[in-house]
Length: 437
Image (cartoon, rainbow, N blue to C red; front, side, top):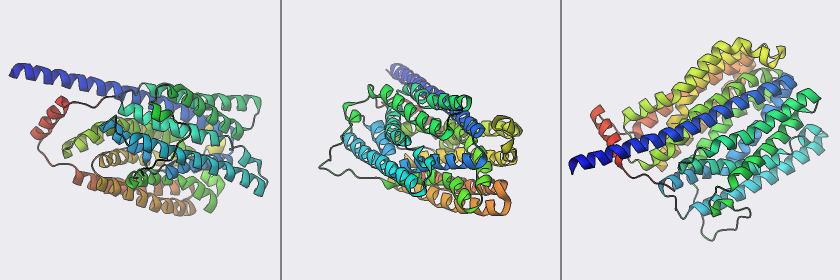
């Protein structure tokens, strides 16, 4: 009986490792493809716009992402957490309907704001981003569906989702450069079309409650865990650096800073892939040893660190890609690469803390929000004193302080243990039943 039990345990362990490898492989490859396509989009935008114009588009993109973060209240992460622990959790439909109501609200606010700004300032550039209203609705639903797919072990759906979302933007921008179309209009229309295509592709895979288009009001109130929201908002607040540099320093300086800052940012998707796959598994575990935490963060962040190093070396080629107007971005990009290497482990520390408890989630959210607010002030001050390189240096200092603080907090929520106990925990987890849809 002992040998039989060991054989079954070994088989279950191998099966779990195989499934985790498949999940991680699909998620990682999807994120890499998305990152590469996003870098192409940024290069095409830079080719078609002067630094000040690039700063404007970058600021609009940040505004869209901030709207998504602000009106979500962390519900997407809640859905992922509850789906991972219990696919039939009765709170899931209510959470999705509430998220959908916020989605529609944000779209209406965006539409009204852009039209009003166009009329007040008599500036057609605001009308050019009206199509992003469609993106706000479709993209937010797609993001929730992707988190459900990962929790259900169906990460293979993400590859097509990212291709549908990114390829139309690339095609519209290429056509704009060849045919002389307006770059901003082409970008926003491509965003809207890609989001709709991805939505239509994934719609058929969803549960009936996740295909709702008109959310009814629930009699029972669905509680919100604002700890998740703090982390999400805090993360997006970091990207307000370009709008603030545009407003308080100089649009050209903002554009010189924005290109490398946004060009390197998609590489973070690799670390996000690790975190998104690890989160459901961590959520099912009662104990994570400190040795596991530190080793997992080091391994998970290694690809981002490696790519950041390669981009650091490739920085002199940036003017060849974007044009001579961005020759001043080379030094800035090399400094930003250091910040990117620090961002990777920060992200994974936050994911770990979100999987532990409400208290840990709130601590992570408060840390991210506080330090990113301070970092924004530092970036503006650095931009005033040292231009784009000065802003980038402040960015690095902010990320370093965030990493140190998050590491100290995360270690407190991990269990101390010797290596043999860590090995035993792996064996126990491997033989435990896994929730599946």
